[in-house]
Image (cartoon, rainbow, N blue to C red):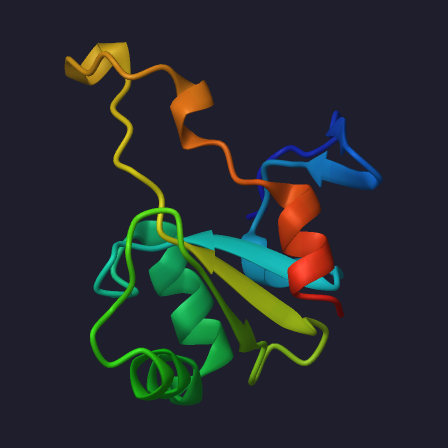
Length: 125
């Protein structure tokens, strides 16, 4: 069962309009999925694992073949959507870890920003 997405949040970053919803990520009809990955590009977190399962094994192959040594924090790797036929690209961002105050962390969310305007111009559809 999909989560309630009746009240999406719209955010404009430069010339890019982003719709933030809470739902099943692999069911979306969008051009690009944005995925958070560790620097070793492992697809093991809950969201990344769901994307990997739906996109098929060629996603992990593309990531590791093109980036055998992983990436640095702040890097973005762009892959095809593979078996996700409605997805043109997947942007995998290697973000710094962020921990909620509930789990004892102290980093504010703004430390995890991705430059969407740069991504849009660097990785056009």
